[in-house]
Image (cartoon, rainbow, N blue to C red; front, side):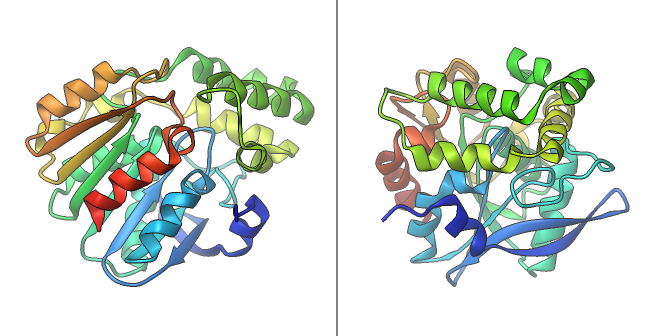
Length: 278
C-alpha cells in the first residue's frame, strides 16, 4: 500500500544541525539497522521522493532520509543559507550527530550535488555513491529555478499560484500521463503556506554554480552508480557521461524517464539501487 505524505512525515524525527553558526532543525526518517545509507532529494522536492527506495533499503540496512534545511518538514524561516554548500554542512552535521564513520549516499538533483561535494572533499567518508539526474559542473541552475529565485517572486506569488505552478511543473515533466496523485500531493504539501512560498524562493535563489565547479569529480574514490533519466530536459544525460568519464569507479545506467527518475521508474530504479547497495 502506498505511503501517504502525512504517514511519511508522521514517522519523521528531528535534530538540530549547525550551519555557519546557525542551529537549524532538520527532519529525517531513520529506519532499519546496519551500515547507513543517506538519501538526499533536490529542489523542489523532499525526502518523500525516495519513499519506495527508502523502504527497500531499510529492510536490509539502516536508511536515513533527511529533508534539506528549508525543505519538507525541516526549518523554513528566513535567516540561513540553503545552498548546496550549506546543505553539505548540514548533512555532515547530521552524520556526526548520528555518529557514523562512513556512509553510502544516494542523491537526486541538488541532493546529488551535495553528495558529489561530500565524496570529492572527504572521499574516506563515502563508500558508495549513487547520483540520479544530479547537478554537476555548470549544468545548473536551470531557467525555471533562476526565475523562481527572484526576490519579488516571494513577495508577489500567492500560495494558490505557487501550488498551481508546482502542479503544472510536475505534471509536465513526469514521464507518461498516469501520475500518482499521492506523489504530487507530497511534493506540493510543504509549500502550501506563505512561509512555504518564501522558503522555496529562498531555496531557488541559493543555487550557485560555483559550488559544483569548485570541486573536481575525479577526486571521488567511491564506487559510483549513475541512475539517469535519458529524457531529462533539466539535467541531460551528457552530464552523466562526463561524470562517468571523470570518476574512476563509475557505471552509468540510463533509464527511460524524465527528471524525477525515482518516481518515473520506481521498480527499475529500486532494483538497480538495491543490487548496488545490498
